[in-house]
Length: 191
View 1 (tube, rainbow, N blue to C red):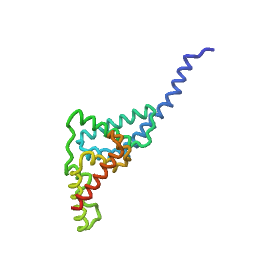
View 2: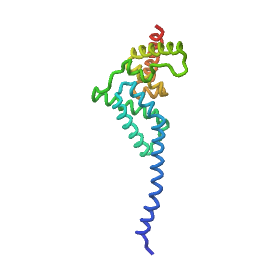
View 3: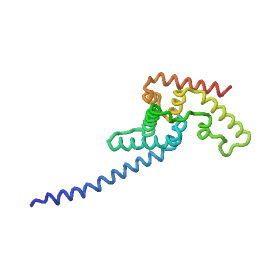
View 4: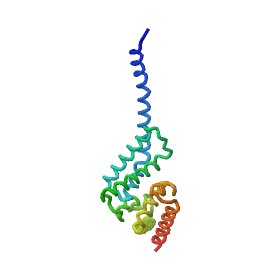
């Protein structure tokens, strides 16, 4: 007996429940990655000169690209590093298109470095902490854009090789930029 019509209807009914959990699982994975890394990525964008509005747009675009990559079946071993590379590229493309990115200044570092000492510090320790943070702020604005970007990306855990790929330069060039930045920070902070 021919039951082609009923059979295809059964296949659709049977296939649908298998697709939904995969989508739900993917949504859960993206949500977990977002919860784990969004704040750090947002701070990276602000520290690298993006306005808060641009940072939010860049993050949205990066997570959409992450979703698309997962849907294409691509394996991403370290989503945070992958997102940092994507955000760097998005910022670079945006910088070429317009000059909407704000320049980094001492005030831009305040949210990241903090003006006040952590809770539990005594008055003397709090004053020393505040002075060290001010020295660090002053030293960081003396870095070149590349030195600053390299330090931010290293602080986020990227390897020199990964940063070099992002900038399209040699690993030695990035190592030199990081080294010079650290030397400059060390000298300026101890002046």
